[in-house]
Image: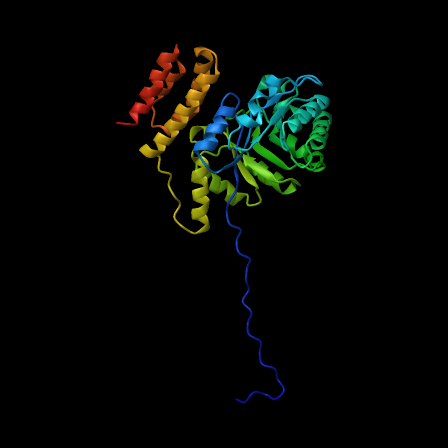
Length: 350
């Protein structure tokens, strides 16, 4: 049939398009573990493993106003940090002392600092510090104000859902959002849970859209699969912070990066290969760290304490038995301890 005169041709159908999905990739940060992730650990980790964007140092406890002793800063001296960018963390409840500490950190060249509002230990929280700090809204707000003034554009907070209840963080949202935090790192447990029980992901999901600051997730990240699941469920996250997982497996950040790359290219999920070569890397890391501790610590007792703490995590990189770990933990002297570590490692050579 001839086309009717004067009628415009029908426009071509426009296919509805969607913006491309954001590539799945999140920076990984090392969480602080007191007695473990000290400067030597961080330096060795940055030298021998990759994929970690920065580390939070174990907390510095505030003294009184004007009391910033050199010994308080020994673990975060810039020359001791090595290749891994380090962010100092402070715990306390005195805004004046906090301001003094932040000035001391600025004098060392730091432009970032973090306030610990998550330490779960009862003797800390009951004094209104760590996970006990947000329970006092007036003091909590004064600390946020001091932090933002003392470290402008670089002040972050690490926090739990509350000390005894999961409701405290929600009750502090308006207060938190009044301050220009560079990030808020959320461990979705309560203080009394310590590191047991389950993370409250549903509570975290309800809170996440209401934060003004970038949010970094922390809690129960032990495998690349854990990281992928959290990233998929919470696509607005700006990072992952990992403590125990990286202490058990120093290559975890590398494995997470490989998993994100596979996910973005629709490739099969890579299963980490914890073979002899992997264990050799971990052992080299442990030996380097042992040598640094031996050169720095005075006497066998401090060295034993440090090594027992290290291997309470690091044994997970080896196919160790409960007996092997018990021998390490119960070692009565340094030669016995070193022999127990060698026995655990030797099990994986057979």
